[in-house]
Amino acid sequence: MGEVEIRRSSRRKRTVRAYRQGDKIIVLMPADLSDEEEQSHVRSLVERLDRRERRVRPSDAELLARAAQLSDRWLDGRATPSSVRWVTNQNTRWGSCSSNDASIRLSHRLKGMPEWVVDYVLLHELAHLIEPNHSARFWALVDPYPFSVKAKGFLEGVSWRQQ
Image (tube, rainbow, N blue to C red; front, top):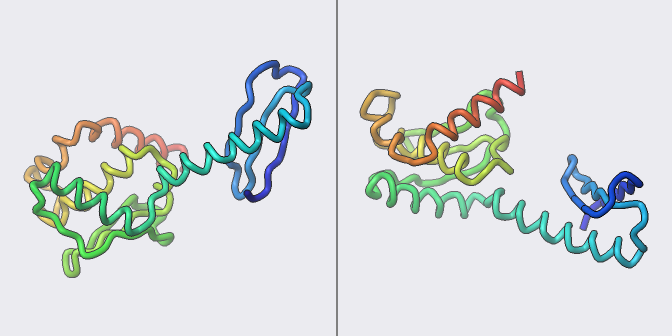
């Protein structure tokens, strides 16, 4: 389960909440809960947090499968990457691709972001396998994705906050 820190508050009356802070899980709960209620809540919240994180932090194999789905849905299957993987050396880009070997790399900074944001970056890189630059033809491939504008705004906000 990893390290769990319980923070009890007399101001908190009913709600119990958990979130990850680095490698630690923080659980916020009312001060007057019994030890039994505490353990029940901690188990439930940690399981829910783990399920959610697995959903929003796919493996490299899951990324490759997702890329195939996105290519089929939005690019008529024309983009077929040889690999899709998370990398930790992209701190200024969200993703990149190599047209030489059709490989796609996504920044680890995307892990934990909403699925539609990761899908947008993945679709963006898939489109580069068809159209290598940011021409009008490139944007014609990417823009039909219904979350394009929202995802661009989300990523711009994250980038601005990290400056």
